[in-house]
Amino acid sequence: MAYYQYHVFFCVNQRDGGETCCANCGSPAMREYVKAKIKSMGLAGKGKIRINMSGCLDRCEEGPIVVVYPEGVWYTYVDEEDLDEIIDQHLVHGRIVDRLRI
Amino acid sequence: MAYYQYHVFFCVNQRDGGETCCANCGSPAMREYVKAKIKSMGLAGKGKIRINMSGCLDRCEEGPIVVVYPEGVWYTYVDEEDLDEIIDQHLVHGRIVDRLRI
Image 1 (tube, helix red, strand yellow):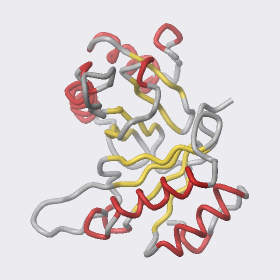
Image 2 (image 1 turned 45 degrees about the vertical axis):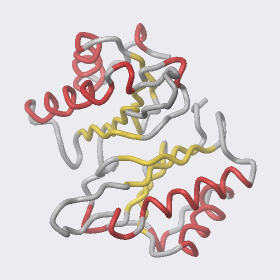
Image 3 (image 1 turned 45 degrees about the horizontal axis):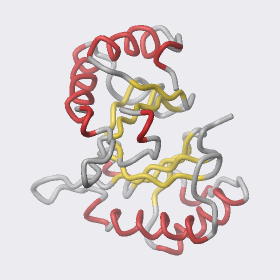
Image 4 (image 1 turned 180 degrees about the vertical axis):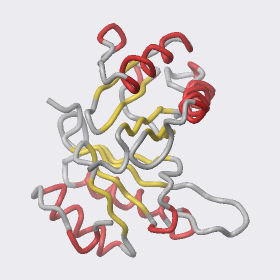
């Protein structure tokens, strides 16, 4: 059994020189939003869900990026509404959100 | 097909107050070692291997921690020799290193 049912990584990398990067899209705050929401829903922890920050996932031009393991489903998002949909559809109901998938 | 054949996350989190944490075990330098080695072996990139840093993976007492996705295999390590074994056995030959697994 997987240590985490869903292990989610938000790229929070800040690139230099104004280059396109996830941090410029507000990814640190977005990750905090999802982490807090998952915790408030009682879904955080071993056997359940972990919301992590990561370094550069090297898909900068497609970002901001979040990847859900162990499935290896990659998403982008614009706002909290997109993230709510990933939480509700994917992390709660196991249904991949095709419209946000990259 | 997975975007990365092996997506590896090293916890580099630094906890406050001297608490046990991966960064205190030198994990940032260890991650740099593996990242550079994978690159020098020509194994870095899409369809191959990505070596990332992450925030706290919440297995602090078992650390330092590295997790290999999509398999979700968790390891600890002491030194570069351990990491060489993970590279050679797991990342190159697809064989899990039981002695380092947690």
